[in-house]
Length: 224
Image 1 (cartoon, rainbow, N blue to C red):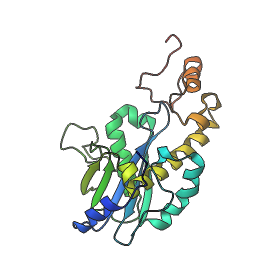
Image 2 (image 1 turned 90 degrees about the vertical axis):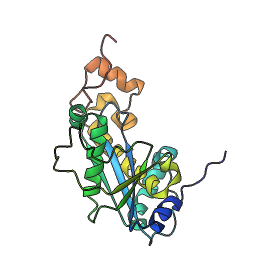
Image 3 (image 1 turned 135 degrees about the vertical axis):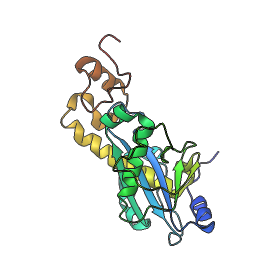
């Protein structure tokens, strides 16, 4: 089946149903062994009439293509921002709550009101704070008021705002990991971006983890 470019059909349908703005949200770094988990948000409204050429799910673009299109997203969208949760926060809160924290930080950095509808990639709403049973429910200072959250599977491939969010999140996180690699050159983060490449796993076995690793995870060990 031929691959199709993302459209604004879903975003425009939500706008036609009464939303004044829609924020596309996506994450990167969930499966990495080191570094932050990063969430991007890109906001569109009725003034954004068509998708941005060259924007696709970040996983479908080369690093060069992502770097080329990312600067254009700011001029195309109404607003955009990126938020992070640190490895220590992933260890303390768990991945779902860390994703939520990173997402709320991204929304809080938009420089404008939070969109009244958020279009979230996937089938699980990890952005809404649950009524109970969550380590962040007691009132983390970075939590913001989030309106309606709509989940859509493969939204990063189908929805232009979500695809754009995936691009800015990926470009930002990759740059962070490349910079962190300067202080930790043995782990190859400038190449593997903190994911479980053979090079990275072997370095953890040989040298042990750093404070930038997710220490609560089942990391490689010297004897295993």
